[in-house]
Length: 297
Image 1 (cartoon, rainbow, N blue to C red):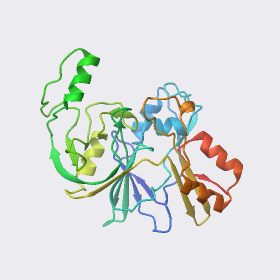
Image 2 (cartoon, rainbow, N blue to C red):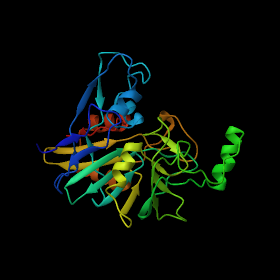
Image 3 (cartoon, rainbow, N blue to C red):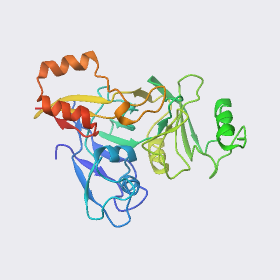
């Protein structure tokens, strides 16, 4: 099969990342469309955790579905197909706009895809290229002065200057330090059951416990890390052009979806003009922002 998708441990919770066979260099379409029939008592967050996907990604793909009370027996779309970001396929690649982390295991011709939590408005996850500078099992957490101040303001109690490993440590059991700034940004686990696939952190990149352990075992110090913010991905495939559109991230204050502006770059505008897409399909993709690849022709 051209786009082979293997989701490990499908019947066991918690799941690991989706593992895809790496596509050829001339294609960026990864995976294939999947659906799920809702069981009694399931929420969209339950389903997101079952398939190791992000909650907001599942909501975007199914905007008509009540996230807390989806109808039992109904069929929902799973965001299991995607376009690879248009960057070199090496090491760790994070697209914060789609709340996903990709790891390119080129030695085994695989791509591992993880849902992530990222920085809240005002404490954004940085954009750029860096490397993993340090790897720590059972890390201690040293909250910054800003984090301690905000915690005190919001919770009325002081955070300790150092939190030891254990169930109260929000970094979980694994941490990968990035080379940005003074090393204050990490890719790490979590001690929470909620928040993956959302904006929840103080700027770090957060993974589910099984996912960070899985990633930790594959990467090394010096591994390249590329972080981008691209809500629109466009790719030419053998059977036509595809576009994948995500809801843009708020900038200075958190905005409702309808109040956000989806910016189409000049380069992307020129590409779209050159390929002459079906206007109705393009407009529908830009309006729906479903996070699913859509044909343009």
